[in-house]
Length: 227
Image (cartoon, rainbow, N blue to C red; front, top):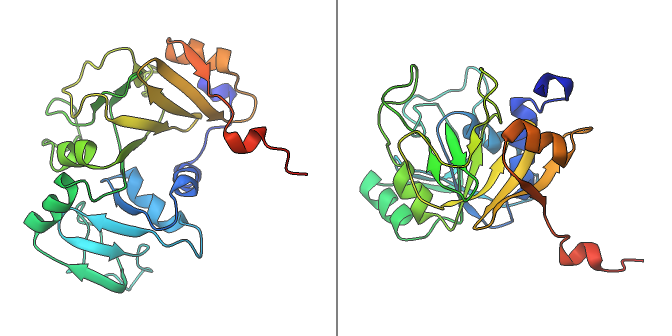
């Protein structure tokens, strides 16, 4: 069913997430797709990127041929360091995470519940990282936890669910879910639709997800007369 709609590519999805990161935010980008967000941060917007292996102030991915494999993120990918960036012990890095010093973390997921429960690790999924790593610390310690993932599995099942069946990473911690078809807010009352790809209605999304989805109320800015 989802193939009837224009899906966001991984790069388009990363750009959509980057669009919402506010100026001055301290942000952790999780292993996998979330690392692409670093390449799409708007010019002129200061975003301080953190990695749990002990880096603050990462830049975009290095150009081909300029990789330094002594400078890597938590996913062992080569990264760059912006002026003023710093290295430190990973225990200090986890203290930043647990101490509430990160504004946003962006994580991948196997499942997210309508009320924001997160499941993003498993020992029983082929190709999955067989440990939770820093995800629990990030999910609970960051002021906002966002998830970036495909809406459907390869089998066509929704990754947004009423109740997670995978091991939980955190309870009611996810505030937003960015997917290839739509963007959602997770609330105590359930899912809110923030935006969707062209031609995909809220009713069609409800059919895909199998859960009720309400339209988000307009922001105060949308209610203002800007003429």
